[in-house]
Length: 136
Image (cartoon, rainbow, N blue to C red; front, top):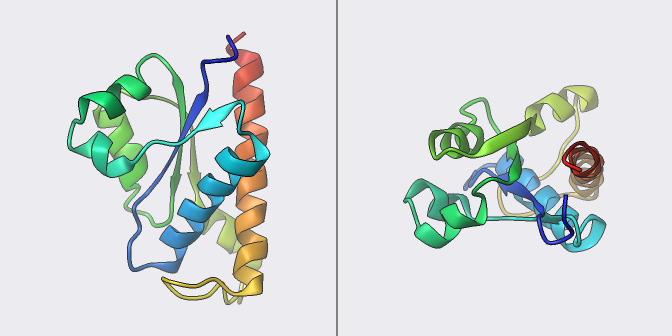
């Protein structure tokens, strides 16, 4: 894979839900801090509405979707628009490992919520690196 071909990491919108906030923050942490040279994010709303620039941004590039709830809006939307999904990550799957955790609210994460979000970001980053190796 050439250095300019990044893995797209796309979070659900998840507005009004703590798990959606965690998904978005984990994606941002991944693309801004953990894998800025290997990953980028695209706005799900632009993908859903068929924005040409957004769709061109994931044409023939591997994608990771990150969803907060069972509706799987990110995965379903990216698939519907022809995205090459290599991994579908679910915040709820990680939360099952943290029974009783109080991650915060739809607008603010607790320290516990941030720690879990960083755990999710680490999983995303690990998968980004695996995909980069597979695509070479």
